[in-house]
Image (cartoon, rainbow, N blue to C red):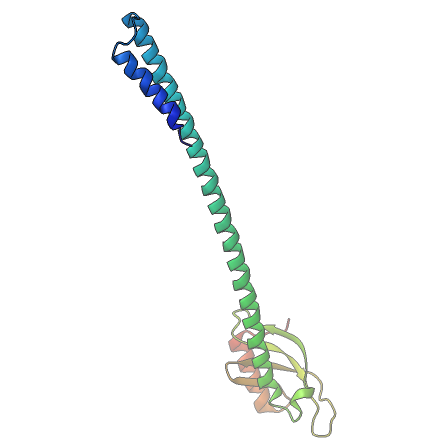
Length: 172
């Protein structure tokens, strides 16, 4: 806030008048008036400075609040993007499992989850065989571009067991 120019000129004129000895007041009275004028000036300057500091603090508080709000918005967007990316990767990996079956669209999943380090998708899948009958749920592990499904065949079971141990893919 600025001190009005009329008041500033009034104070300056009073000081000039005192300095030019345009009054017949004793020097002590002139000095007292000068001290009073200086005190008024200092009070006005101090008040203006206090108002400026308050305005500056308000502006800073507003800027900090806006920064915090924007940080929250950014964090929410990042979290939403992460959820979307996780779901897209999960869908991609489940498609790799589906591709192992005669009728991929008919595959059913249960207990689907990520391994502890989110490098592999684990769960159980059941899909119809060539005759249309569901085989029952079988454990699976899929990561990268490879899906391993447990089966009653020794070779598939051994591959699945090794993958499950290596990737820490245990049922939930």
